[in-house]
Each structure stands twice: as C-alpha cells, then as structure tokens.
Amino acid sequence: MAGIIPESVFFLLEQDRINSLGFETCFFPDIASLPRMQTFAFTINTPRCYDRVVMVANLKPKITALEALAAANLFLSDHLPDRYCADDPKFDRTAGLWRVPVVMAYPFIGPIGRVGEITVSAFSEEVSSHTPFEEMRSRGRELYKQHREAIEAAFLQAGNS
Image (tube, rainbow, N blue to C red; front, side, top):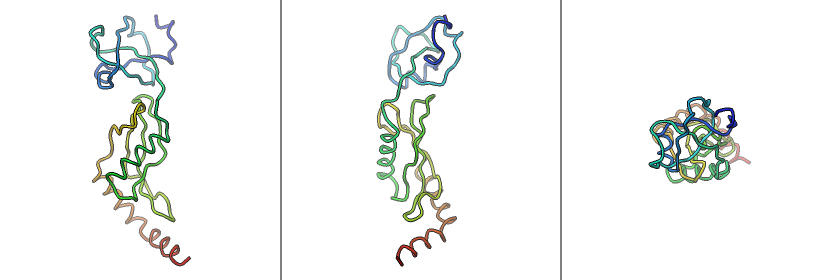
C-alpha cells in the first residue's frame, strides 16, 4: 500500500494533535508502513476514525508571510511598546504555522536583537502562541543596556542634522 501513495503527500500525525486542529480524520489500515514526513494537515474527530494515528494530506497555507507579519505586528502593538516589532516570518511545515521572530528596533539603527517569537496559524491570522511579554521586556532591557551608547549616539547625530 505504501508504494502506491507518494511519500511527499502523506505523513503520520498523532490523534491528539489532529483533534486540536478541528477537521476530519480517517483511519488508514496500512499506516505503520508509511514513513513520517514533514508536512501538516487539519482534521476533525469523527466516529469513523480509530484511536492514535491517522494519515492526512499535505495542505498549503492560506496565510502568506506578509499576512503573518501583519498579524504579529498588530498583536505586538496591542501589548508592547513601539520598539518591539515582528521580523521575517519562517513557515514551519510540521506545525502548520508561521514562526515570526520579535526584535527590538530603534530609528536610525534598526533591529538590535531578537527578544522572542510569535506563532501565527497558517490558516487564519490567529496568534497561536508567543514568548511571555515580561520575558520580551526583560530581553529588550538587556539589549538596550548592551547598545545604549550606539542608540544615544544615533539620536544625537540625527538631532544635529
């Protein structure tokens, strides 16, 4: 059975993860012979399905990197000061979400370092998880202390222009 199905199309996913995503699942009888692949899918719990492992098809994300970036920046603007901003999102195929780094940035200098991460669903603009705010603030204070002279010099130079 495994030879009939292209390896890039299917993978094994734990039932608990599938149930948390909210779409339909179905049991595949010869699933143990298929290799685990890096992909993602959605599924819902139905009476037809069995207990632990299911096979699902590879799906493409509905949210682009730009939309994930916008969702992360909106989330940050609601919870943290303006020096915290989202950086270049990376798609995590296994988890089915965008991983968006959070950086501390200043005008005239740009980003001075990473303070955390926000994950955005690949199928909605919903924030799935984030580094705790206090942890991001703490890392931001440390970065400011490390780069304080450069930050102040950049503002002084801009003020003298």
